Amino acid sequence: MADTSQISQLAQDIVAHHAATFAGFAPEPMPAPTRDDATYLAALQACSTLGFIAHDAECVAQAWQARAVRTGSAQPEAWPDAPEDFGLQPVPRAQAFAACPHNLGLYAVLPDAAWVGRMARAGVPTVQLRFKSDNAAAIEREVRAAVQAVQGTGALLFINDHWRVAIDAGAYGIHLGQEDLDALSAADLQALRGSGLRLGVSTHGYAEMVRADAVGPSYIAMGAVFPTTLKKMATAPQGVGRLGVYARLMRHYPQVAIGGIGAEQFAQVLATGVGSIAVVRALVNAPDPEAAAAQLLRHMRPAVAP
Image: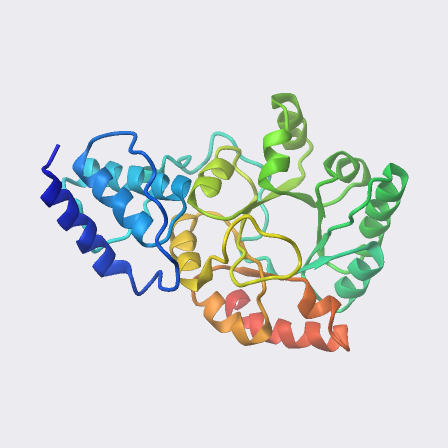
């Protein structure tokens, strides 16, 4: 292991090169190291200083060390973004769900089947039914109604959480959070993959992206990019700087940015390279949802142009 002064200097160099990209985050406590390699220790210290929470700092530090071994250089100026350094599946993936378009475009997350039909008819290319209920009959009714509502519109319909009903109803895909993904048994995962449904997975940082990659989802959702009042978030808003490095790492996946994104922020979000932006309030709370959809679709065009 290199001496402490060398580790400290490398950590300072990393911070100096990347502080502007990750501005606005308070330093996090450095987690207990899991190895004693110099590049790893420096990167762990630097990532914590830059505000990455423990499991994400660990994830990036391990990748930084893997790249140093692979290339023979610590490269403090270059943020790691090679999938192999993070242990992601090589392409083509051994474990993979059915593919979806690389650019899913405007992605409307909607509370019921009536909203799904309304936004599909307004030309929104990707819609998600996020119907919250403990009533199994109501869930089945809404999912089947949503599948019916997109018929003839060309919209791709994802169902949030209710994957068994989504399979039976003939939905295009499902969307799961990390907890939902973790709750699947091996048999559940096999049944879900075998159904042919597309799978989208929510992620909130490096460790969750690596976890999602292990099942080979159809797309990766990344957020929350900006503050959102829709639900209590366990992680701080990620910001456009982090979204950019996430997008480079996950470049072989279709990517959906989500969380507090309004029309005025579309350009900076799309500049990161993501091919889809998910919105909730920008449509559901709009005085004229169809007009709002048309405006947002115009803002999306740079991402979906041939």
